[in-house]
Length: 124
Image 1 (cartoon, rainbow, N blue to C red):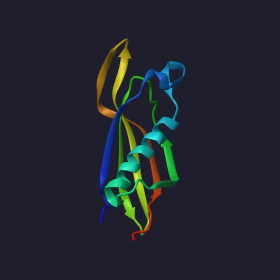
Image 2: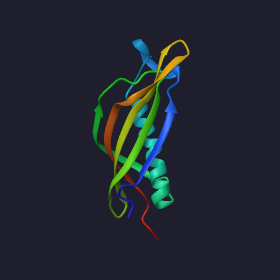
Image 3: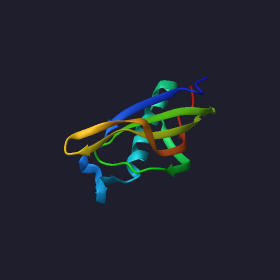
Image 4: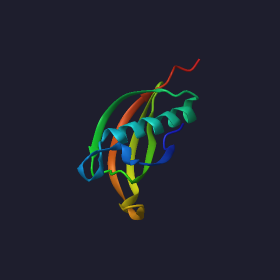
C-alpha cells in the first residue's frame, strides 16, 4: 500500500503571475501546483499520470505573492481500486522583500490546503 506516501515540489512564483495589488497571486496558482504534484504521486504509485477527479475541500489560509518560493506537498490518505485521496498543502518557505532581496521563513506560512481525488486506469 502507498498510504502515507508524500511527494514534495518547490517552485519560485515569478512576478509574471502577480494578478493583484501587492503582487498577490491568485489561488488557482496553488491548485495548478497541486495538480503537478498529484501527477508525480500517480506516476510513483501506478506508473500512470492519472486524472484529477475532484476537490472535496480547499482552504485559502494566507496570501501567496510573486517572489515567494512555495513548497507543495501531496500525501496519499486513501487508496481505492482506481482512486486515491490526497491531502495537499502549499507553504511559503521564502518571501521576496525588497528589490532582489528575500528571506527564508521559519516557520513557513501555510497558504493553501486541500483534499482531492485522483483516478488511475484499472490494473490489467
